[in-house]
Amino acid sequence: MFALPERVDMPVRLRGNRCRACGQPFFPARHYCAACTSGDMEDTEFADAGKIETFTVVRQQPPGGAIAPPYAIVRVKLDNGPTVQTVATNCDPEKLKIGDRVQLIAHRVLEDESGATVVSFMAQPAKQG
Ligand SMILES: [Zn+2]
Image 1 (spheres, rainbow, N blue to C red):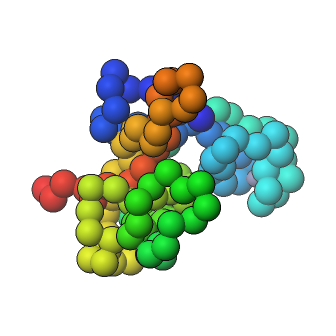
Image 2: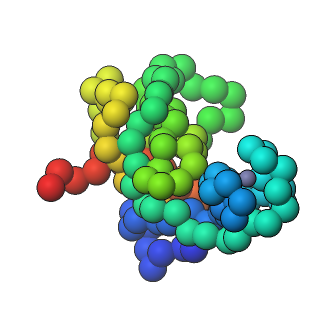
Image 3: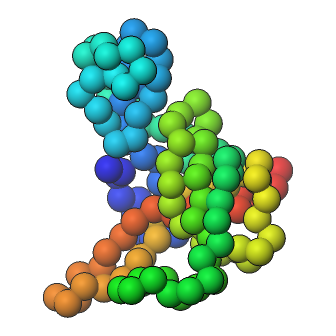
């Protein structure tokens, strides 16, 4: 899904693929293009940044939820890439706005029963400038 950076909280670039026929990007990768049904796909790494297309703020803990609310679930349109859904971190979810620039980072979600660290990607506000 993505190459692990040297440590968590560093930017990550998601790996997916792109249709050679029409250019449509996909994450996760697909065998056939959902836009034009071509099977001519090439693997690619997408930008680690993009902007918020839409989001929702979660205020109640879902059953088994690993993250303490409130937090925002954001849909991020990656620069020159697909739209991905993830959780916003390192920000006040009440202050997010559609169109905000965000960066994807590796984030430690939890430790499983064996003590292994589970890492996923999350979005944090992009540094200005
Ligand atoms: Zn296509």
